Structures are given as C-alpha cells and as structure tokens.
Image (cartoon, rainbow, N blue to C red):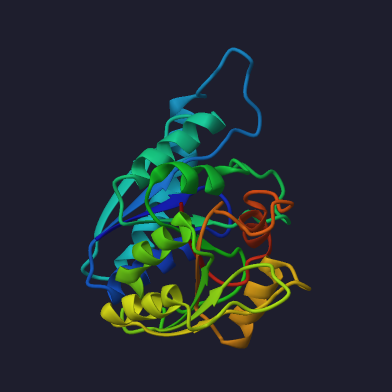
Length: 272
C-alpha cells in the first residue's frame, strides 16, 4: 500500500503524517510519500515557478521532521518529493498526478485561522475531482483514531457514492458501519428497498457490519445532518462521494461536499 501526504510549512501537516503512518501500520505496512508543495507569499512578475533553491531551503526542515516522525513507526518505506514550483495550478496538478499512483492521498482541511495561507484553497476539491483515487481529509483541529472501527457512510444512490464505498473497503474491514441514505424528502425511503439490502450485503461481503438507515431530512441541511450523526455515533470516519447528485434540483451541485470540507469535525474519505 502507498499513501501520499501533502506537506507544507503550516502547523498541521505533522498530524497528516501521523495519520498516514498509523493507517499503514494498521493495514499491513507499505510506503509513505511526503509531497512538499506550497505557494509563495509574494512572487516576482517575471517568475512563474519561483526559485528552486529557496523552495529547497523552505522544505529542508520539514523534510527532516517528516523523516523523524516516520522513524517512530518502524517498518514503513519512506519517500520524499519537493514540488519545485510556487505556482498554485502547478502544485495542484503535481499533487493530483502523485495521487493517481497511490492507494490513498492525505490532505488537510484549510485552517481559516491561519495567516499567510500558502496552500491553494481549492486543492482538496481539485485533487478529489481529478485523481480518480480516494482522498482522506484531516481536520485542522482534534485528536483522532485511525483504526476506523466505527464509520459513517453517506449514500445517495449515485456513481460517486458507489465509488466511495468501494474505495473505502480496504480501510474499513472489520468495522461497524452506519449507512445514511441521504435524500431531501418529507418522508423516509423504504428501508427494505433491494438497493439498501444489497448495499448492506456488499459491505458484509467485505467484513463490514452495516446498519442502513433511510431518514427524511427535509428540515436540516445534509452536511449538518451527517456531522450530527457522526457525533452521535462516535464515528471515526465519514465516507462519502464528492460532488454527486444531491436530491432537489434547486440544490447546487457540490454544495454538500463544500459544506463538509468547511465544517468537518472528523476525518472524511472522499471519492469522485
């Protein structure tokens, strides 16, 4: 298994590395790639990528700390790559390209309290949409376990939801899952519909014990509902498709995903 972790000069990236290392340790070991990339606070008009030597100097102490963190988790293979550009579009494309060759990519939630933010604001969205692989988002605050024994799955009968469930299976074997069939409607869907029965069976085929719920959530936002359910069930992971169909035509495509990225209180695995 290979996990890519985005590194920058912010305060929260070591939490992402710890998450990746613990996941690898829990699921049989493998390789972890630290991928350093960030924008410049200022960039001369004549420069597109920035100064390579300056980027290397910025990355150097974080590279050392990255290796020090991984050293506490013996048995993992370690790799490092510095993106020699401060151009946001190039950084996003490089992270996306590396994610395409990984089993999982770990990114961080944008911290609204941060000053001098140097991570492209839409990086998580762009990587999820274009890499074709699962992406794990880690909140900028909070302490989490990464054995994923209790998971919440948001499902809405879309291609993206199906993809998210399939991509998550290697990481949730043995877990207890609560599946929420998410739809805006005044009445709950039929819990005995063959699709939800088959979904529970599919999860059971992979060692996941699942309870499928079909709530009516007409009076609450989808993101608020999911995060409330995650808190109530003490979930360690939220699994959901990104930018899929969301029910009523009036709802903007992707609004739930963006709300989750902004409000997330637990790790979120996204797939598109």
